[in-house]
Length: 357
Ligand code: WQD
Image (cartoon, rainbow, N blue to C red):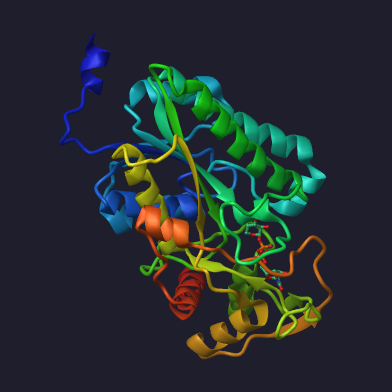
C-alpha cells in the first residue's frame, strides 16, 4: 500500500523520463534539455564507455544535485526491474548501447548481446509496469547507401553492413512488434524511433560534450583532438568520390538541436499526440556538408590551421547521406537551429575545456 501511494501522481506533477545511457554524450545533453523543459529525469548508466564528467556537468548546468542516478547495466533485468519498481516512469529514452562500428564487426556476439538484451529488458520492464512510452535512439545508418537523397522515413532500409547497424534495425523492429502486441493490453507500450544523422558539437556552456575513449572514430572529435595537439594529423578519408569536392557528404546535426528533438518526441508521447503507436522520425538538418567543407569551416570559425591530409577511402563509408526533415518539422514541431559554424565553435570550446585551456 505504501508503495502504491508513492506512485500516485497528480496532473500537475512533472512527468518522469528514464534516460538509459544518460551519462554519455547524447544522453547528457538530452537530460539537460528534459530538465529545462520541466521533466524529472532518472539516469541509468553502467559507465562502460564514460566517466562522471558529463553527469557532473549536467548537474552544474541544471543546478540540480538531486537527479537520481542508477549505476546499473540494463542487461541486468533484476536491476532494471528494481529501477521501475522504485520510480513511476512515464517515458524511457534508451541510449545504453555499444556504438563503435568497427568493434562490432570484430565482436559481434558482444554487440548483439549488449544492444539487444538491454533493450529487451527495458521493454519487458515497461510492459510489466503498466505500459510506457519508449523512445529508441536509432541511426541514419539503417538507410545504408540510399539511391535517392535526401532520405525520408519511407526510404527503404538496406541490409546492415555491420552488427552495430544491424542492432539498430533489429531494435527498431522489436519496438514496433512490442507496440503492436501490447496495443490492446492494459499496459500498452508506445514507441518512437529517432534516426540520427551525424551528431556533433557540445553544450554552449562547454561543461558537457563528446568524450571518446582512445583514438576517435568520428570526424569532429578527431578534428578537435588534432587542433589541440593530441593527434598529429587528420586523415580525410577519400577525395575521389563523386561529389563536388570529392569528399563524402553528411548531415551534421548539432547535439543541442538533437537533444531538443528528444524533448519534442517525449512530449508527443506523454501528451498523447501520437498518430500511430509506433512512429519514426529523421533527426537531421536537411543540409549536406562535405568533409572538406566541415574541416575548412572549423578552421575559419575558430581562427586556426588544421594539420590534415587526404587519405584512401575508409571501407564501409557511404558516399552521401542527408535527411528529409519535413516529417519531424511538421509532426514534432522541431527544427534544427544552430549553424554548423556555431556547432564547430562549441566543439572546439569543449576540447579546450577538457585541456584546461
Ligand atoms: C563522417 C565522415 C568519414 C573520421 C558514424 C556511424 C553512424 C553514427 C555516426 C553512431 C565520413 C570522414 C571520419 C576521420 C574522415 N552513429 N572521416 N576522417 O561514418 O558518417 O557515421 O557515426 O554512433 O552510425 O556509422 O561518421 O564521423 O565517422 O564520419 O575523413 O578521421 O568523415 O570518412 O565521410 P559516419 P564519422
